[in-house]
Image (cartoon, rainbow, N blue to C red):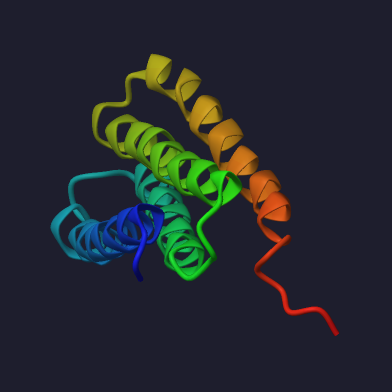
Length: 127
């Protein structure tokens, strides 16, 4: 892990993963009697997507440094923050306007997955 993108992606993955576990436990135990089943479902979706993207960020930290890997890492991080963050806030506050932010995060996440295709060059050994 000798480049800036690897360190950025690795540290981001650790933080997102840690927070996903923490928020999952908080939702299951701390919010259980406070939120409706619908709100808890929104919270759980946020936790799941955050963890999925913590894992993919960990994967991107292993990729050879390239512009595509740097872009994918940032898209995954900022997409996770917007997607999951807006869902956490929506679950707690029930402010419907927050739901308008969620698709922006989703588009960033999709962009990250799409950008991973461009990291293939130099990351897969030729057969």
